[in-house]
Image 1 (cartoon, rainbow, N blue to C red):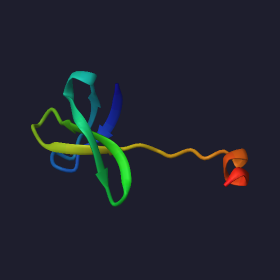
Image 2 (image 1 turned 180 degrees about the vertical axis):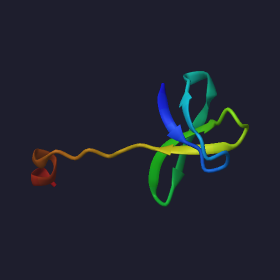
Image 3 (image 1 turned 45 degrees about the horizontal axis):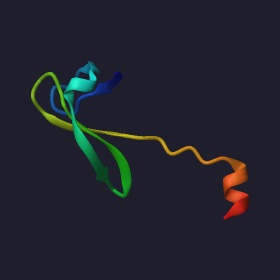
Image 4 (image 1 turned 90 degrees about the vertical axis):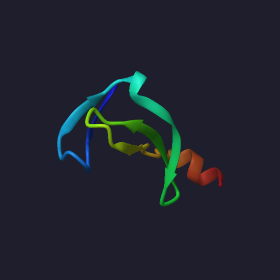
Length: 58
């Protein structure tokens, strides 16, 4: 579960796994596609965490 602010209904909603419809990308960022409680298709972008060790190895 996660909380998302819907751009269609302008509400902050708790999103359940059953609402997830798949993976998606937006502006080169990975995320989860889901259907809001209002019926609008939305994307929740995943935060990319990069450690200092990973950057030094690259």
